[in-house]
Image 1 (cartoon, each protein chain N blue to C red):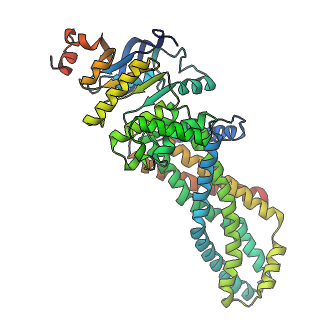
Image 2: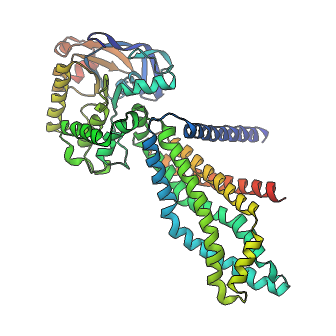
Image 3: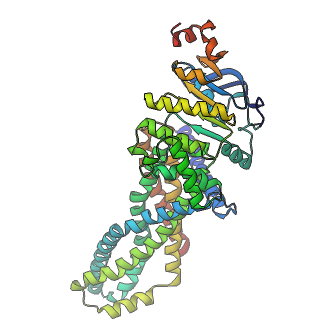
Length: 259
Length: 245
């Protein structure tokens, strides 16, 4: 048992070191002044923002609206019964802006873009595209990892803010039939309940989740050695680890800021 | 580089990737402008030897010098500079699946040079014309036949005018027309004398006639070095089997 725990711990440390080192190399590449391949890297960043951010808008809109309606109806109908109707806006900010917004957006990005990154890079390994890039002297970090990291982080921040707005405002408008509170009062209460720290923490979470998704999924995609059967295995692992680590990070940030 | 100057040296190189992919104690020398083929059957070690020679795998023991550089010990900038001077075509073409043919061939120019887009367009179209695949410029790799994909990969490998071109499994995916095109390319290389060619083949072919030397591999070992006309004199059974002697 002790041996098993020791092996798992050392494997976990080795895994974390590999992912963090990949992140270090990507950030080093991001701040590098070398002009080589910048244009191509920008093109990949633009494609990644388009795919992860813009193309995800319909899914994020629908899911944000559904979550917003559910939370607002539950809170809006239950709180007045216990004499806490005035806390509605506070509860909405607490649940949607602080927790649900960043987390659900991260899950959507993992399902759509994280899996796509792991599959794409795994297939590139199988098809010798990665070897070909190396043979052409094209840096995998500059051309593959860094643009995906930047693209996912940018898209993640924008999508999280978008999710919050759609869930808080759209959710209220849809749920209005079940509520008695006027829209103007609701918006005023939301504005009063929302602090700068809430917005800051939402952005911090979005950045952390974006980093986690891009790095872990890139790492697993690039870990494919050459067999087609490894691609789904690495993709499944990437998604599982990403979701778990996002939850742990969410907990750490929440405890760190609010406890 | 002047003609006859060593451009590639393997000194007692051994490497092991997985079962059937190993080379043992291989030493060989290739000079500037030579056209050389590594020849052997399946699992003979020729493809691994080619990847080692191209600096894409690190040996377990021994030393490799490619254009005067040891790839395994090169600093990052030196390694990237080396890669610019070397073209490689793998057995699978390795074209980027999310780019069309034109952008695949343009990629090394866009990454490594500061040429304008019109200049890049001219160079890419000239390279595609050389391989008679310019009509495929808008297509994506998944839409290409293997032979055409290999020609596109050759056009890409040549686009930076490399000093050495590595072409793994030269016969793969080629029909009779493709073989004629490849022979023409080898003959043009011979006349120009600017680029060294290191290719590999798993079967005897008439294309050997236009090469300078054949280096034979069996069970991961380098067993013979001969000019194409001298092959029949080699006593190694694997060589005799390949050539039906």
